[in-house]
Amino acid sequence: MAASPLTSTILFRAGPVDITRPVVTTWVIIAVLAAASWLVTRRLALRPNRRQVILEVIVTGIMGQIDDVIRKPPRPFLPLIGTLFVFLVTANLSGVLPGVEAPTGKLETPAALALIVFIAVHFYGIRARGFVGYLASFAKPKLIMLPLNIVSEITRTFSLMVRLFGNVMSGEFVIALVVGLAGLFLPIPLMALEILVGVVQAYIFTVLATVFIGAAVDTVEPG
Amino acid sequence: MDTIKLISILAAAFAVSIGSIGPALAEGRSVAAAMDAIARQPEAAGTISRTLFVGLAMIETMAIYCLVIALLLLFANPYAG
Image 1 (cartoon, rainbow over the protein chains, first blue to last red):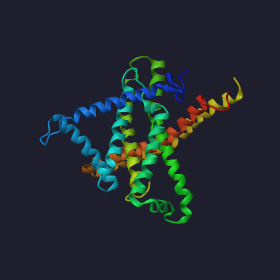
Image 2: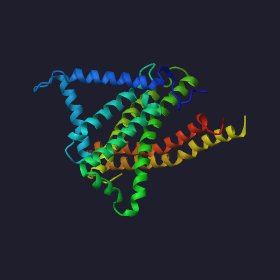
Image 3: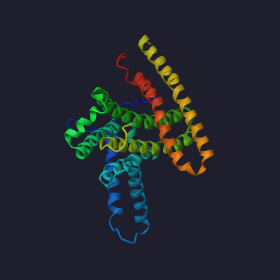
Image 4: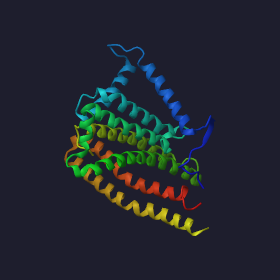
């Protein structure tokens, strides 16, 4: 029987805290991304070289997507949304490397990311409309909608978490099953599909986070 | 094998098999509609296929929920000891 996808292996203990494998993978991804970001932004010039052009395409692409959804100057949202997207793409695709499990395929990493989005939504909402104005927005369009709005706030965060976790985990689970049943070369098309799913899921998580933030700062209809 | 484990395995199989009927039909409909739209208006193919991918992933989430429930029943069942 395959190992349970809901538990993670503990690598070592730091005091009372168990450090699991996805956490260490996440640390490595963070270090690699930070180093790569530092390297590519080291010598920025007005007349860009090839490396800077690729960087500018990525950054302006993300800014354009945010602009399409929120329809406000995208600069205040770029640090969170851009980091989320770059991290998610790297984390989802890291499962393709031999010996690495995607950290988003365990429940804890999507839960942490969804919690970040949950907090960021309220942060941007309060900053855009003020504390009272933001709280009043929960009672729209009628006061009777108040409990539904609060429940939807929690359930959409939950579904954000389960969507990412389920997609990445199910891909890895199916590949593990096929390797166990059929041998070495048969899962290759499944792995190609997994690359597509990883990028699409990263895009969807980011777009939904942008839509939620846009709804909180009151420019898009809440979805 | 005790009854609860047996029922859990059956319930997991039923959750995935019945739960994937709806998303399968919905994905078929949405892809057909997108193909129709692209055939009528090929210049909008980029926007349509991007929206299609997002929509497909949202629909697929329903099937993923069923899969998560099935996995919970199989691996993290609180009643099966």
